[in-house]
Image (cartoon, rainbow, N blue to C red; front, side):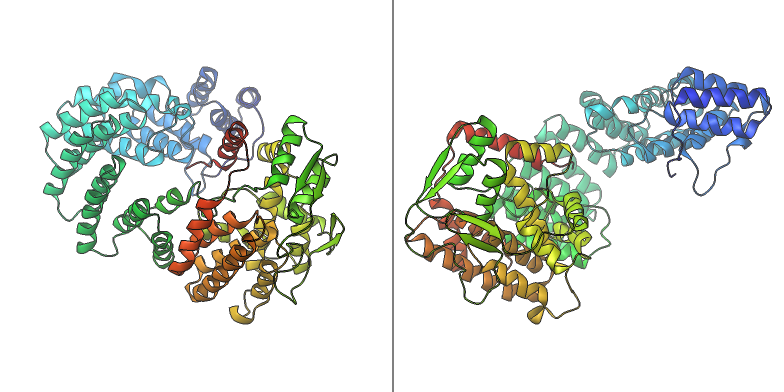
Length: 606
């Protein structure tokens, strides 16, 4: 039911509806009443006008026919008129359909739905089916802001249970709705009554969920175990038991249940997803998540959507978000931006050129002094013959490539964000940059546009401008993965350019390019050996340089290594050592503030 293109308020729609009624134009009146209902579905004046329309049109149901693309306001109007015509079951079906379309709107909050008489006229099986449809349309649990829109359905459930107090299916469905809207005690009571009245697998599952929401884990596991007894072939219950055990830290027992399910069906999606998530939770080996991503790619028609991969990657460096920049220049810049303090910072090694460019733009009064360089100079490419993006002139640095086109800047401004569900999702999202030319993509790396005029953009620009620059660089490199994808990987332009960036001067761009290569390995198993070798070489090079001087990007490179499919054990050990030995240069109070900021930026709806 696509949204109508009306922009009028409910009051304006009603005024036009009344004018049309006065002129006897019932068709136009119906259209405006439908528009008013879409805007304000519980407003008494809307229902008064609908009743007047019905009286003028012999009931009015035919004024709101159901088409393949029916407007939601017309569907709701037809529902109310069906109820007024003595067909409330049909009307309720339509209201539930409207709830499925827009669950946060209170389509059912009208007297005829909450009246006890309605439950008496509904068959208990019909009531149960409607409640299950509502449950399927809303999150579990429903956020507090969305619960008032479901209050009428909970009232209907109460009335139906009162009329049919021993109907197991109805009690279970009512329990499921009560649990979703925070009425956990009621959910337990209804589900327990349903199991006593009619023992069944679904009844025990509903009871197990209710107990789990109430924090009564032992009783939840017992109920789910009884559900398995009713139907040993329902492997989804095995996954539910495993998830419940994992929630209380009993991972070994949880994985035993997963193994039992997989022994019956190695491709059962719920068990595969849960199993990989729990194994990653147990040992932190990214190989489990890569295997899960491979399964998702190879089984696109799973029975339902799973969030295990995104849940496992959320908040993890490079798996689910860009890592914040580190180093003394970045710390001084953050102080200058948020506290207005700091006029100079003295370095023992040159800062990444991207950091210097952010300082010049965001804190031009901050002076950066560099002592004599010891060890490999980070201003020199790490390999000969690679293309360069920067020109150095003493302590200053300027881009060596032209700025991107305004269209390219707008495109990346729309896409760039510090968080993503998981690497394959980031790759898919970056397809929006596929039509950009190579000069534009390279230009974005050193000429990042201003942040967008959004809440995220304002936070990024106002508290830590380094984050926005890193976001742009990451997404520009992801865009490079979509450049000339018809070319074979080994000789492709995208691989050649990304390797140039990886082995260029030591910079944030190094991290962004390496992340793009790692992402390529996630989505294409054929390139994994090549990417793993590149990552191992680049990390070994960072370790060599770190023996003589600080390498601000070393810890981030190590996190990237641990995110790489098929990484060899020696490099994984080196990565863990680099992370463990990396000093924290941000003072504790400021680190706490940055952590809160980062959590706010990277929080996404689930």
